[in-house]
Length: 438
Image (tube, rainbow, N blue to C red):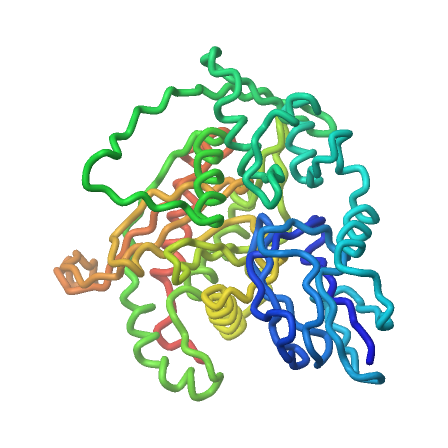
């Protein structure tokens, strides 16, 4: 018999630790190769960890709620001698141990000390690299850090704990200044701190605790509104040709390519064409610098069964044809709903699309997905009477119409650029070729 370490996987270049959300197996359970053993979370995404071997779960080294450095052993799987050990890109390389492996507590100590020895204070309290980084950026010394209550396992200080502390820190001042440094330039942003109104919970109410993802979304949205002065422009678009073309080819498209075509890949195609015409939409702001991205990576907001949103990214979307975009959109949407996205698949976006028409809304004013500079919303497509110009004169006809809306960062995108860009997207949709081949 031999014991194989189950390793905390490295889920992306910038990910140095992950939190255990829950174990799918308990000690003594049989496990098949590639069977999901537990679910872990980073500050970006939740994911399952599969077993690299078939065997029996012998030991669990860290319980639910523990934050563990990547590369550390999190469990032992007992397997027969000579059993196949699968190498998986999602899981760090496993190492086979003999039955004289260290005891549970020794392994816990060893895994943490080897990977994060400097994360303990003199008082013996553990601080994750993420918490230490936030503390350093906010000027919180060790003595102040020790006084902050933690809600993690064993009183460990979590990201949410330190962010909550920062919201209430120094309430005697009305304005808090945050300094963001870049290599060549610095920017100071003054953010008003408000005293929140008291909410009466004594009546007939239900108190629902936000889940981890909802807390992250809330933080990101508030940050975006503080950082970027939002402006939203709207255009109404006649998408009759596009709508009727899809109705005409959707069955043959699915038969030919094995995927259902939605409107989303058509919208993304139009956006990538417009970005090529107006590249200064595809940017981010760093201090007094404008970062223009040469790659066009389109984020697509996807609703999850929990009601939360996640934004998987189609990298180099301008290099894909409509078939490629359709397959990518469907794949990312399906895996987003199933919780199967990798962290790198929700990073690196340069522009975001959200389809509010899915919920029957005709238009929306979306919040910018930082650090991007713009986000577009597509509304519901509805039949409406519209004026058509013909060689014989103007006529009123029933057309398929929709609204596009785009919120943009007014620090760097003015009305002329933002308005011209959204109009160009509309022009590409209106000019869609009804006779286009699939």
